[in-house]
Structure formats: C-alpha cells, structure tokens
Image (cartoon, rainbow, N blue to C red; front, side):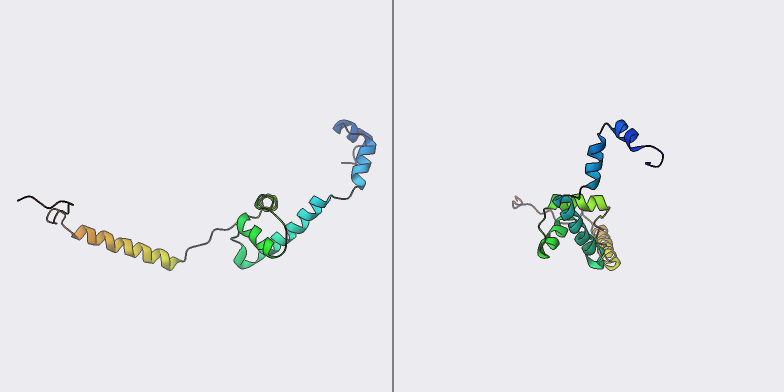
Length: 129
C-alpha cells in the first residue's frame, strides 16, 4: 500500500501524525505481547502432541502451569481461539457403542416378553381381605 500512496496521505487518511507513525514503527513489542508469543509457542507444542489434542483451555492451563508458565484460563482460551486451536472431542470406541446398543436391545426384548397384565402388583400396603 505504501507503494501506491505516500506516507503523508496514509497518515492523513487514518488521522495520525507522521511522527507518531514512525515512532510506533520503530517500537518493540511490549512485555505482555512477548509473553503471549512465548505462551502460544508452548500451547502449540502441547496441542501438537497426539494425546493432548483433546485439551481445552482448562486442561491446557494446568499443563502449562506444570511446565512452569504463569497463566490463567481466560488468557489461554484467548490465545487458543486466536490461533484457531480447539479441543477435539474424545471418540468413544465402537465396541463400547455396540455393547451398549446390544444391552439395550436385550432389555427391550425382555420387557416385551413380560405380560404386565398377569404380573403381580407391588404396593407399599398389604392387600385387604
């Protein structure tokens, strides 16, 4: 954009002074931003591991604290959101789903086999004679 427009025109359009633009351009990033960058590198390293991809911000914060970083859950959540990192849900193995489904199917079949009209009625009081 600077190739097309002169710096003075850009500063005038953005309503900033040229001296302010040059001062901001020469400034280094602040301590918070540098700390965020270091923390993000650690988050990406943890998230890149195969077993920790399912870590959301609370578990990620606990892992970072174990590694010696000082951080809070909301800060980790903000950095993860900014980097596009999300916790992947854990998948339930197919054998558990099939076992659960088979169990429910067997229960349904057993309930269908019971004739509720001939079953004794259970009450908390004894029947009167």
